Image (cartoon, rainbow, N blue to C red; front, side):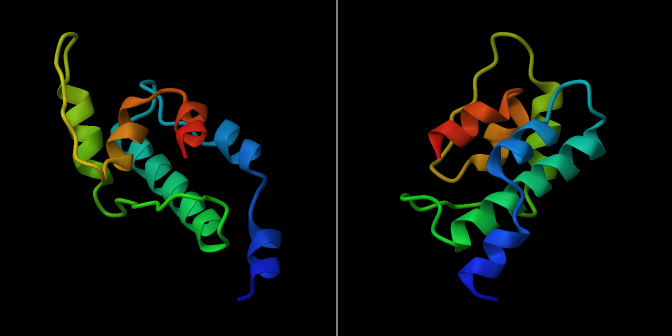
Length: 102
């Protein structure tokens, strides 16, 4: 698939951000699915060089981040390594902030 075909298949980035959010009101399995969908969208954008920085995804690790988020209490802290997009998506209610960082 060439670059033009991929771009034609992608939804506009803003539409994806508004459509898919991993918020606290979702059931855990819905959060996992939403985080996976966001990462797949980021992967497609990354494959056509939409980002100027390296993007490391965590496909398959969504459940860990959602489970950890569910047991966090106010005052808890989490120190993450450089490959942590799944945690960012699980803990951040505003996906716009994550796309701004990318």
